[in-house]
Image (tube, rainbow, N blue to C red; front, side):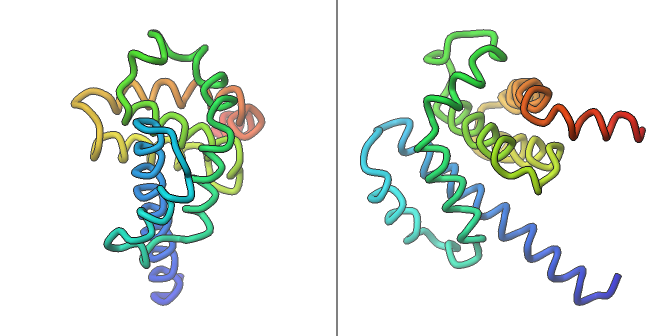
Length: 156
């Protein structure tokens, strides 16, 4: 692999990570104070480093998560061991974001989606929250990415 190709992949990975961080911040705001997603989006776009994000991925994550939040919560709820309202706003936001990405971005391997959600939780969540998020998204992936997981298990 050429040096140029490695640099482009690294930039793409970093841009996606930044888009996830920003979408998480927007979804967190929305979870705390459901309101006009356009206002939240405008506020996030003013954040430092927004220009380093993958704009298309950011928009898909934030807008898609908010527009489908009820369905995503229903998809997640069977896999949690407590009531939805007992989750922290960060846990809720990361789980919704991760579930949206698992369901709608099949071009991204499910393990990458889960790992990125875990990293977001380590950065923004409580001490052990990343373990909870990992377990829940693993179970969500088993449902929404069943075919991908089966192929990967057969190859191992």
